[in-house]
Image (cartoon, rainbow, N blue to C red):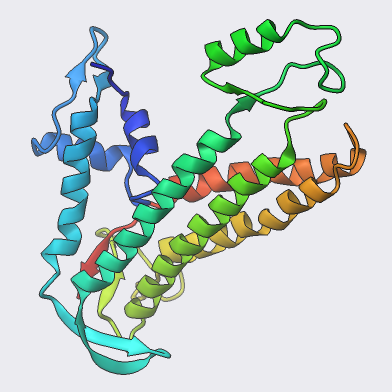
Length: 268
């Protein structure tokens, strides 16, 4: 049976459950909800069955509040009653779709090209490309030039943009519900934590504000990725490389978005 390290479990779940973290998995382990095998060195090794159990544990939050009545809103105005569980279920379903999108996007972008200066294999055997691709867990690019076709990268970033928008939608919902005059839901607030150095009584939605800003940074990389496709009229072109540098920054921002998604909900 193949096993995953604890970081691999986080990577497998993060698209569907953006608030998952290493510390939360360890907490679930301490409560007996997941039971990883241990390597001789002590490292945790999670099987797929553990991931399934963790998925079930994360779904519990929405089910917990399926009967927690709250007001539904349209145009930000009171509409009809709903439950907090229904709200969470909507976000859960959205991230299920996002997970499927991310799996497809990762598969599409995971190609390998070692086909020479213009993709004709003039100075290298195609078997070299096949060998390297197999070793790296990639698929040989069917038709490449000097580079892998940039539409693959554009699709990957478009998917990240959609996921970032879903993250911001959830964060905005929490921020709205935490406002003083609403106060239906709030972020986790630890003992001794201050919301403001000048006004320590405040309980600011710091984490969801950060998520909102990071989501916008990720979406800002989508247009450069699309431009990178259009600006590739020949085998290589300097203009796309400028966009490539901004995309590299966006990759790091995307990682920050995932790492920063550790927030909790509490019904007031």
